[in-house]
Amino acid sequence: MKATADRHVPVLLQRCTELLGTAARGLIVDATVGMGGHTEALLRAYPGCAVVGIDRDPRALELASERLAPFGERFHPFHGTYDEIAHAAAEADGVLMDLGVSSMQLDEQERGFSYAADAPLDMRMDTSTGTSAAELLNTASAAELRRILYRYGEERFAPRIADRIVRQREQAPLTRTSELAEIVRESIPAPARRTGGNPAKRTFQAIRIAVNDELGILERAIPAALGILRPGGRIVVMAYQSLEDRIVKHEFARVTTSTTPHGLPVELDQPEFSLLTRGAERASEDEIATNPRAASVRLRAVERRI
Ligand SMILES: C[S@@+](CC[C@H](N)C(=O)[O-])C[C@H]1O[C@@H](n2cnc3c(N)ncnc32)[C@H](O)[C@@H]1O
Image 1 (cartoon, protein in one colour):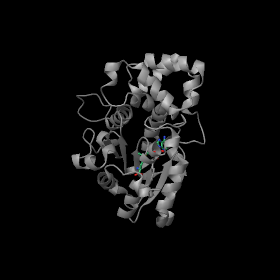
Image 2 (cartoon, rainbow, N blue to C red):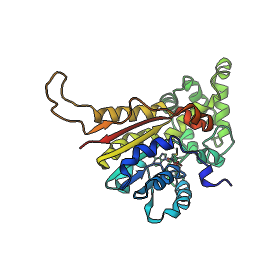
Image 3 (tube, rainbow, N blue to C red):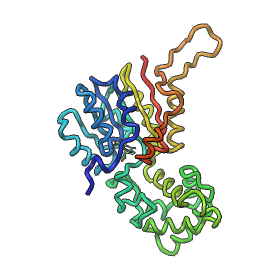
Image 4 (cartoon, rainbow, N blue to C red):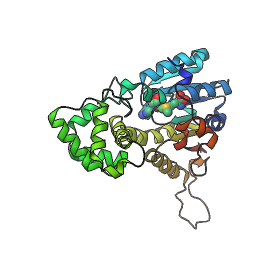
């Protein structure tokens, strides 16, 4: 068994630590504590800070708590989803969100996140609650499945895949990741199968997003996280796919833009937040070479002015 620190390599670690330096003597909420990599770096870099670490995955929280035990009272775990951030901390000087699944979740094959290994179709980040991928695939209508595959996987063969899922489950309910991967393979025309990596990737992403209501929770979480920041407080968000990044980008644009019409000599309302990043920041070639997960990261950050 790998040590916790080796099960997930934190992305843009230096940059996140630097951006959250303004919270060096305050409270930081790591809303996706995972294996605790970013949190450990923050606790080490800023001996005057404390961190509340949120994760919906009890297993991640258990491993992070063990890893961070040497920091004693400076680390507090909180089990829940990040839209519940105001229950974890009423106010904070910094918030970090490193979205998506961790390498640990992908590596634990029995959790069903990976199309590369045969396992039960679960895909819940919190296995103590909610609906599994198998329940979703065996009960959703063809129209609902099409919508999930289009919206969350941007899958152009969504109708064919959805129809095949429905036909196959009429014979016997789907239970294994290998069955879903095979359905996708058979639904996609041969020429399309030869390009763009494993064709099951988009379908697995889509089902995972639906099972965990990832976008709905993120849409609620960003305003909630902005809401707990004290003046001067900062939020740093790292997204790994365009659907999530779009939500972050729009919400940050909304709170950093003045609503005063152009052309007026004075600003009637000062935006509450200012942008700390121009566009989205990406990882360096060097980081991507040692940590392929960093290839798709987009980091955005804002600071509360008032
Ligand atoms: C990319 S990992 C974070 C890794 C962490 N930064 C580290 O250095 O170890 C994302 C984590 O967020 C958690 N997560 C995903 N969606 C969540 C949500 N809606 N609420 C709370 N935690 C969530 C996952 O369970 C996972 O452990």
